[in-house]
Length: 112
Image (tube, rainbow, N blue to C red; front, side):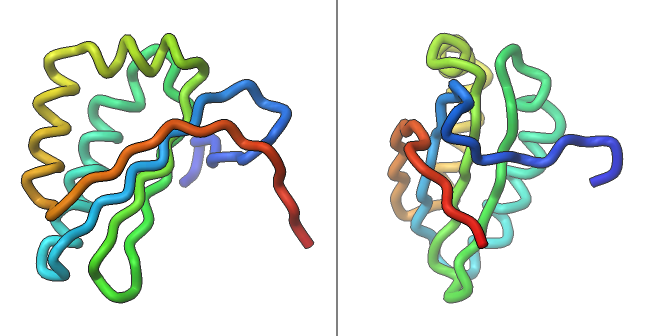
């Protein structure tokens, strides 16, 4: 990722964290990962308050996790209020069996 800042998990940062867990059929996992990545690259990363998105796929093919950071809850809520955002979320949900989004704050980070 030349020229782009990588996601940093820092408990001293005042970011809002969204962790969204999608349960998928294994044959839909790659399509959901691609849709999330393309939407992030072309639209989401250009929104006010966007910090980062990390997309993870489970090794068993049954889950996709979207870990997103926003500058504030207000920025995230403004993004969610947009009609374009709601249309994208419906597209993502159409590839999944279930979607479980939750908002978090980072309390601690431990590293070697």
